[in-house]
Length: 253
Image 1 (tube, rainbow, N blue to C red):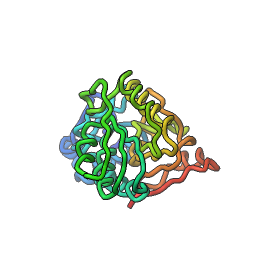
Image 2 (image 1 turned 180 degrees about the vertical axis):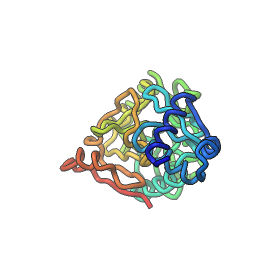
Image 3 (image 1 turned 90 degrees about the horizontal axis):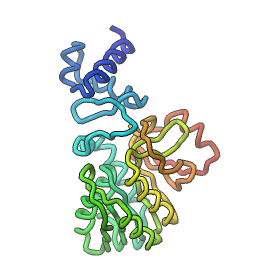
Image 4 (image 1 turned 45 degrees about the horizontal axis):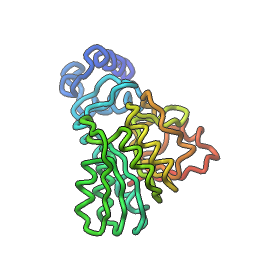
């Protein structure tokens, strides 16, 4: 069985079952776990499936993968992105920080900074950041989402609009071929958009798996972002889209 034939069959199995584990695929195709991970990563990079901890699931524009699983997916890459964001962040700045597993990595890295004022609707990130005594952490109130412990709704939107931050650090559920930034839920996207509107600069933190991934709610466009921090070279189509855009792109190491 050739690589393309195996990947086609893997995709068919995942589409039928909804989720398939790496161990099951190893037994099915009699190849190594490393080979299967490579297949899954290639399919995920094309937006054909979503990588999960220990396997992969069907790609959906409506539902994201499980939050607990996403914490483990590309953990090293997210940590590198977080460290790079922290290096870019000046002390004595004001920052909006959105929900998401990448933002948890950013929060852990930001602890090395000092005198930051952080306005966030990310409950877990707030718990990390408040440990830095010289941080002023403001946790926005509103409707708490069980899916990612993010806060959204009208109360959250009104609270965001009371501030003007130096930076908005955020992630995205997906980035399509035209450079559009996408999310899965309207309520979450609305708060991110409000934070972007109330910020002087924007830092987008995404690992390579987000490029080509589909989601149904638009946040904005790469053309409007100040800086993009990711872990690999951008796909060729995105490089073409961003030509002459002025977006600063940094590859974390």
